[in-house]
Length: 395
Ligand SMILES: Cc1cc2nc3c(=O)[nH]c(=O)nc-3n(C[C@H](O)[C@H](O)[C@H](O)COP(=O)(O)OP(=O)(O)OC[C@H]3O[C@@H](n4cnc5c(N)ncnc54)[C@H](O)[C@@H]3O)c2cc1C
Image 1: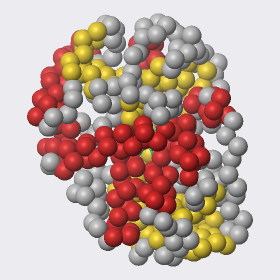
Image 2: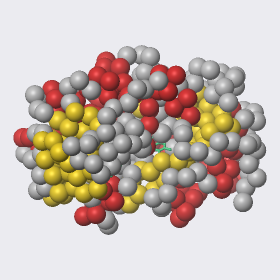
Image 3: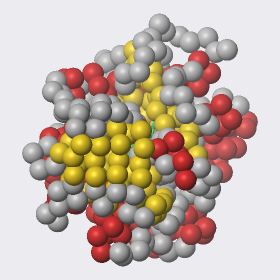
Image 4: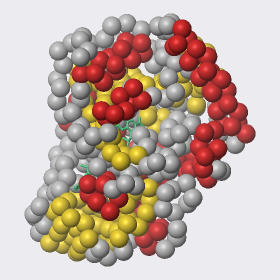
């Protein structure tokens, strides 16, 4: 077991929720009766809320339910990176699933513009992002040095494909190391994003928190204390999707991702979200100096295929070292947390009618802040217009 540097809160609260705007959220009611609607949306994260927004714009009566608070899952507990494109780097996804991955890239950038317009610069910071080859600081050994060289070659291949498709990219060579700067990307506090969207929607749709769904059937969603009868159901749950819809077992698989938050006051060092070592390790720095850091998914593959969301010493020990590399100095940790996401085998996110009138979206393979809302819009047009989802989804 790893020796961890600091005594920390190993609790279920993410450091994003220390934000005063998030802490002052005054909540939504619990569903305690049987109601009817045109559409029921399960899950009030970034994806479910985007679906509700698109549905109310079309004049429909919508009910949305969540098992916990708005964005109780990954949508409120993630790295806060708003990156263009699919989870897989564009040059790799082009090879495996063709030019539709470029369409997905463009759709996520449009989604980012929409979010920025709705929520403003206080919530969505158009900072760009940095993809580093390796992590900041000197390589620890020859293997790390060689991996960094290989990743620089990969960065060049990615840059070429981005340029070929008129997507903005620059070389980065600075204090943190070498890699790419992607000026279109952005950063956010993910809880603030979701609560901001819920605030805009709460008078226009019936939204309910602390209303865990116990069963989803065609035409009916049942929660612990009430139910929703609706001809269309959209299940917008990324992690644990196969628990909500057991028909998806074998098509999607849930994993835990973990993060930590440092104390404030670290010197300003990360100008924007930074992800390194093939994108596995990542950090964002807030204005007050604190770092939000995650990673190590590739190093702990076996233990992290789990529905459990508790942080664990081994992964946290690894992320702590990433935090120190990102900060360039020792750090004090104040919070550690985990959350669930889900994966598909071919890397394409899911947008699929699972039962008649029941559409599932999710399995964003670790990067769902923008792909999720894109899937939500595809689900809405699939449900209402019978338009098949674009090829970049697993349908
Ligand atoms: C540590 C971590 C870091 C990440 N970093 C990034 C990042 O920087 N950028 C990025 O793009 N992506 C990132 N991701 C992935 C991203 O967070 C998710 O893909 C995205 O937030 C999924 O949002 P969602 O609304 O689709 O679903 P979720 O947030 O998974 O779920 C939506 C809601 O469904 C509710 N729910 C679940 N079960 C039920 C039920 N039975 N009844 C009712 N409600 C239910 C949950 O309470 C939750 O609020 C990260 C994920 C994690 C865990």
